[in-house]
Each structure stands twice: as C-alpha cells, then as structure tokens.
Amino acid sequence: MTPLSVVIITKNEEKNIGNCIDALRGIADEIVVLDSFSTDKTEQICRKKGARFEQHAFDGHIQQKNRAKELASNEWVLSLDADEKPDFTLLENIKSLKENGFPENISGYSMNRLNFYCNKPIKSCGWYPDTKLRLWKKNCGVWNGVNPHDRFELYEGFSSLHLAGDILHNTYPTHADMVRQSDKFALIAAAQFSGKPLLWLIFKMLFSPLFKYTKNYLIKQGFLDGNTGFQICRYQAIEVFKKYRLAIALKYS
Picture 1 (cartoon, rainbow, N blue to C red):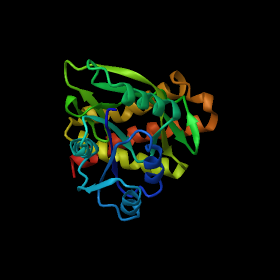
Picture 2: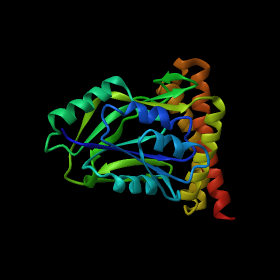
Picture 3: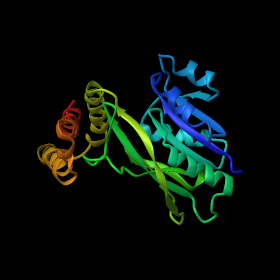
C-alpha cells in the first residue's frame, strides 16, 4: 500500500480542524499541520488527534503551503485547508489508489471542490466545480499564484488526472464570515498589486467589479440561488473593488 501524507495549514481553526482530521482517518498515514501560532485550541486538538504539529510565522498562503509540502514524509501528498474534508466518493477513490498503486506516469490528481455558504452547498456563482490539484507527488510541483489565491502547479513534463468526488469546503458558515473573509482577502491581494501603475489600478477598480458580478450572477447563474446567490455575487464584486482601492491607498501610503 502506498503511504500518503496529508498537509494542512492553520491559524485559529479550533472550529474546523478536528472534523478535518477525523475525516482523513481512512487514507492518511501521516497528518502534518503547519500552524501560524494559533491563540485558540488548534494545537491541543491537533496533538490530541495524533497530528504532527509544526509552527512557522505566516507570510503568505503560497509560502506557507510550500513549507507544509516540504514537511511531508511521504512521496504522495494530499493538501487540504482546515475547513475542508473529502466526501465519501473522493475518500474511496484515494483509498483505491493507495491500495492498487498510483500509476507511474501520473504525478498529480485534481478534484472538484463543493463550497458551502451558511451550510448550503452552492453550485452556481462560479463556485463549482472549483477544480483543484490537491493530490500530488511531493517533488513534482510547487505552489504558485497570487496571494491569497494559491494554486498547485506540476512542473513541466509531469501529467495529472481528474479524480471523482468532491472536497467539501465549509467556506462561510455565516454571512458575517463572508464579510470578514472578503475584507481579509482584499487586503492581502492589495499588497500584491500596489506596485502596478496607477491608471491600471483605477481601470481595474472601476470595471472589474461589474465584470465579476455580471459573470457570476448571470453567466454562472448565481440568480438560481435567489438571495443567497445575490449576496455571494455581491460580495465577490465588493472584494474586487476593495482590492484595487486598497492597492491604490497602499501605493501612496
């Protein structure tokens, strides 16, 4: 049987990390949690449930996830966030790969992520299938992207397949969580864009929010989820506006 490491980054995730670890019992030979000095009960929960617990100061999602990757002891790694867990289908497919052996010519597996808002699964608003490459050989790729929107990329010459099943993502348990996360992500992204030319930032601030809203509410059929879809698409657009507005402020601060 092929051993599998699961890596998770955390910061004050006492509400989520226990469920995440429990859901991995059938597939994880090692669970590594890289924590950013939580002040809640995250550490106690992780240690009690048998996870290997490490800490490092947070300096970006991409940077922290690359550190977590290097902490894995096994060749094959599954990367999850603390508020995520595999559904039954995904668990069974990963088990099958572990038991029967991973194909030698495949270095990674993508899977869909099903996001939840106020405990409701959302398949509109551009939220699904939200495909992620989360199961891969440790030394065949690296985390890239623009913080906070990281993505794992295999190096050139390595191939991937898609695995059936969903990552269940407890994205926003409440509306207030969505507002807080929107503000947080806008600030992180603003730091990445503050070096861009002023006219580019102004153009993006004025037109990108409208494009985002129109795309997700109309083309991605957010309207099918009624007021929930409206609220999600609205805050997606607000986050985009704040991102560029804050970038301009940071540029001249």
